[in-house]
Amino acid sequence: MSTPGRGLHGHVLDTLGPEITAGEYPPGSVLRTDELAQRFDVSRSVMREAVRVLESMYLVESRRRVGVTVRPKSEWNVYDPQVIRWRLAGADRPRQLRSLTVLRSAIEPVAAGLAARHATSEQCAELTECALGMVAHSRGHKLEGYLLHDVAFHRVILEASGNEMFARLGDVVAEVLTGRTQHDVMFEDPDPAAVTLHVQVAEAVRAGDAARAEELTREITVGALQELDILAP
Image 1: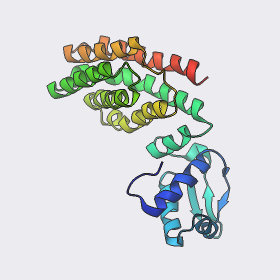
Image 2: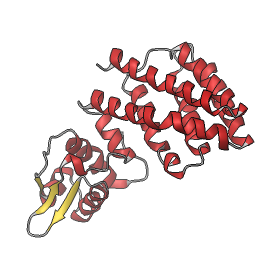
Image 3: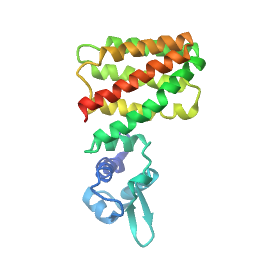
Image 4: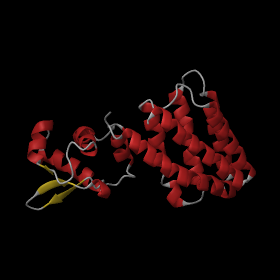
């Protein structure tokens, strides 16, 4: 799926990015921009713009007299939402989902505890609204609607923590939740117990009960890992 507003270089990235993250160009591979420009039927300036984007993600680097070289995976910006999206679209999806869900399990419970201490009344209201939206879309195969409220819920938790580092992980969590839905790593209807937990987290945050908010959110992330054991072993 192309990213709107990115023009011709976006079209190149939508093909070349997933190929790199899928290992079709192993680390150390040299990409010839003139050959790629011919392959994608774009100008060299368009190709250079695409390379600049890949460089910003640390997927490739330009070396004088060598060309554009694919970096080792250990150097990639694995937190970049686009890199996450590309990796989730490839064969590495189960491992990527597990890695990201483990990250969530380390961060989100702590963020929920902090949110119970620092959330504003507006954030508490927004959290409750998101949880109720999840309930409303949890039956009848309404996963797209459910996803919108689920993503919003977790963004509010991270932002309400008052920690700017946690807040910046909102896009990462959004990509995990979106990837699970788009690639059918979800049950047809969400687990009722998980939906109830989200409502209870919203209540705990509103009540200022940090310990309970953290405990309930940990249950959510543990459940997400258990779902992966079934759906993406």
